Image 1 (tube, rainbow, N blue to C red):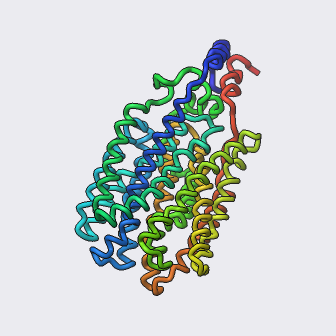
Image 2: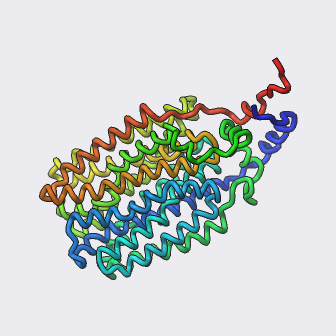
Image 3: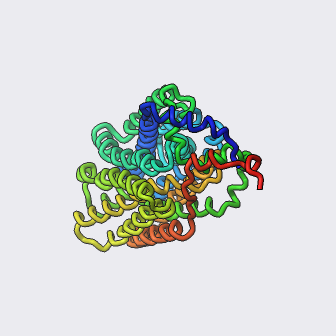
Length: 454
């Protein structure tokens, strides 16, 4: 049992409550969102630039699939080590090191001379970006009470939609007027600038000079079970995570979710340009619509999940309702190849992308919900994101091979994406188990066996 001096605890809490609470946690998650925005600008740039690069390097569909997938080879491989590093050294150290590394490799892509050099630069980018999502999950678990985690996760997660949306007009415009190489230099420099801000702003909440006792009390207010684990438990052996079925549930759930979502990161521009007959100028104008709408749906998903939790609904249902609803609706992507109207296709793709993002915030809150102690949140997030990148790795190669052997038909890939959404929804619905809320006061005031012998 956790043993505290309960005589002093209420006094401390009352003093904190009398203070006007600071809100530094929102600034912190804003920087996390900006970091993810830059990461997705970097990784989506190739899919937007690829039609231009394919003309210069004479690349066919199968090789395009390999190029689009190459980033995810190292990105997936380094997910689990990244989670371990974040648990050991923290986001203040690992996050800026990662951003600096990936920014350099992004800028180096401007020197590509063909398929081989492009793959080398994408492999370097994947290593650098591996810690980004585990870092953001770790930041939210440290900086936010449980009741705000889904919304906070939605705020940083919208960075992927913002980055993807910005990449389309930015890279297309630069490619048309200045050549595709300049785009990689511009977004590489953006990451280096972010590092300066992060180092100036980020500290853990209990060490941050701009966090007062009231905000710190609030952050810890409904993390009782996790606080108890942190105080009483020894460090969890990393290998024990391999025997935790909830870790595997999060990993496989994300594998199937990403098999669908990877389409928007990789083959989506080529689908509109080559299969649906969009001009490059038209694509630059309307291609970002699904990603822009997805920004709002990401935030909405986080709000809905946290509101359900605040209304007294169990954490299990509060997290799973937006996840399952979003993934089931996202399966509408399977109708796209059977629709003749390009306008209606854009509507369907936008709905699918928005629904996919609606599920994202609650999913990203899950590592902190199922981890057995705070010292494993980063590692659990690393496993979960490994599943995400495994799906991202498989999808573009599979689509490229399918196009090669099916006379460039997108029917199979898009129907498979729909089925993947449904499988992912089933995994989250039936396999994942989320712990109930335990208030901090319930933990710290519970009598110890020594004081109440039976």
